Image (cartoon, rainbow, N blue to C red; front, side):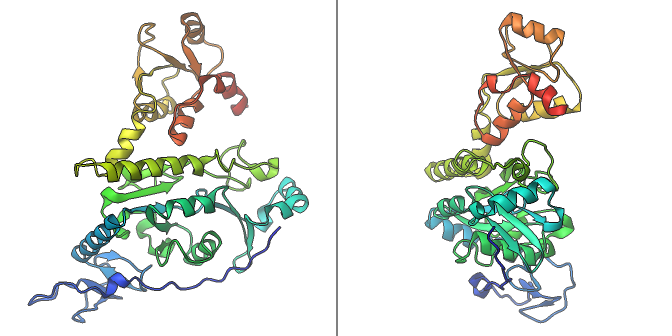
Length: 381
């Protein structure tokens, strides 16, 4: 097992802060350091404007100044044919665990096979964490760097964020000072208000939708990466104790790469301002995944409603009636129902709910036969 000690480094503050803002007869307090205006010295309080402390300690920008700098950044990047990409860390790029939380199977596997993980498994000795890079993590960064300016955005502590950044970006090529951590995040939620760029040109990749209450339209939801059993939400993806790992070239990051490339291409090929909007493009791409499918559910509980909403986002229709003319798929939560007998007799596709989830995360329709109803029973047993 490779052991690396990573030391936190302060990043250089953005050159944008040195660009002049318009001065009038009265100061508009464009930039505040601490609680005082950096321009006129007036006290403005601790909650002024938007917090940009990740760029310069204690920095706050007025709404007008943040908008001005965002406009400048968007124009600069547009000339370079670049958009902005905001990346989560935990369960998106890496999975981290304290050494004491490893279970017996994981300790045994790492003891026997640690040498084969030299380039993707690290110990952050300063904070006592074992960090596993997600397969394809560095390749993903290299490929998107030609199309996007990237931010890392985590609810973890800044010290941890900087250490992980050095693992992902040891040459400090991709992120610069664009690392947003727990100390910068208001009320525990993430927001694009802290990212310099028009929202119509910013993509997000994260495994958790709920932390982006204001910016879900910009989000590409990625399947959660659980290498270690600790904090894992499933039994099938505890890769370490099973001695496996996510596929590098057919896994979640490789699939997301295809999506961000498609968004970038469509954005810069668009001839109208309305279509030059990543939110519009994401809706367009997603709505075509299950286009032409009409789904009928044999269960009307909360889980079925959630799955139905996902299907509708992908262009499918959800039928309340078991209609042999219009229904194409029966989505079943059980393996022995009258509805299943009907689906077999009518030669309808018969799938479990994971068929919809898999399409949602992969951004492409999945083979129905790979998601038989019996698997639901096995997964829940």
